[in-house]
Image (cartoon, rainbow, N blue to C red; front, side):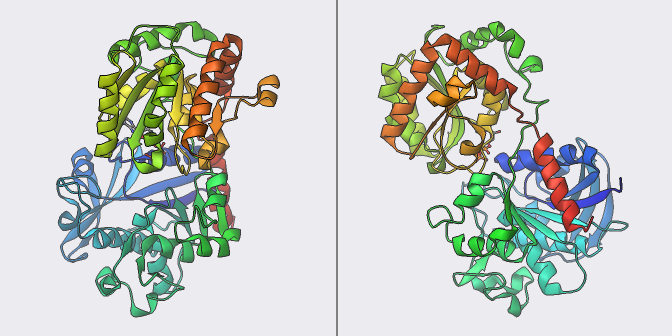
Length: 482
Ligand code: ADP
């Protein structure tokens, strides 16, 4: 089998920089694709944690002036990932996260920071890096969105581009006066280029100019073509629907393996579910909850934002408590939501516990110890927490949107009778439906054989990258003319 070279262009990658599921995907796909004959190199910005993790690098290119300062393109391998790092201190070497400064606000020059990344992605596609010619370029989200635009407006031979939308809510929209400073020619500012409602749209450019557009679940692919889910891009997406496909994300089943997870109190597997309750005991102690083995323990691991619908869970808390439930929440984000959950924990000692931080280890403990993982998202491109939950025997209670709709089989009477159910879904995303779903979940929990069956079904589901990687590999091969 001939090797196929793919350049991935992305603004975050696990385990180096992560703000969300995007990093997980960027960090996992190269390993999932390697056995299928696809070699992925990834171009990322040289943020401080990336530079700090480099042990050995070669300079692929010295760049005396790259968007206003000297820069270097480095070639290195970190944690098994083959990387190109755009080391441009004036753009990336600063305190804060990848997009946001220490003051919590977006960096004012984000348009330039990510245009510089895209320009580099396009240039590598045109042969800027010695001895490397990718056959396909795979861009992720708005931050990499201009890559397709640079290649298009440069003209000349170029590799095909696959643009993946991980979340349509972030589109990278900036004032038109920036056009020249981003390195784009005047002709790029047209509806068939980067123009987006009078501004420059990074993600818009990708949707318009990439050879294929993918998103991270089939249901989300359909939702974003509608007025309700399209966030302004629905017309364009509908027009390109023959080039749009939904491919589910997977999770790293080595990192998320309840049978060999060093981060949980007591490992367990589908054949040793009797060992699982030790994790519930641990979790109840960790969150100052009453040590009650029979109380249905609802867990949350999430960013706290409007998208995630956790304000509804806060409102539904009386129902959860009426059903004898407990809540263990790990999350960070929206200050008002944090305050709401902190107040609830104070009002219901022993019943509600919260940790407001980002904590990878605690996320594993919640998956292992909760009876149910709640994901009431208003929209959810794919969602990873419910995939972890399936694997850890924590029955997911989810909104029937996006990837949540595609990955959880609702416990309808038919699905229960046929033994297919893996969780509970509700729709539309509104308080009465969530309350009803909580009651339904609690009733199922009391029906021990039904509950155990759902746990077993979930744990048997394939949530790995195997199937998704095959779909990506086929798409890349088709575009490369294989
Ligand atoms: P999104 O990318 O929209 O935040 P996903 O479900 O796709 O949502 O991915 C979120 C990832 O981040 C999951 O791997 C989840 O476990 C993890 N995560 C979210 N919040 C936290 C947190 N507070 N602590 C630890 N892990 C978290």
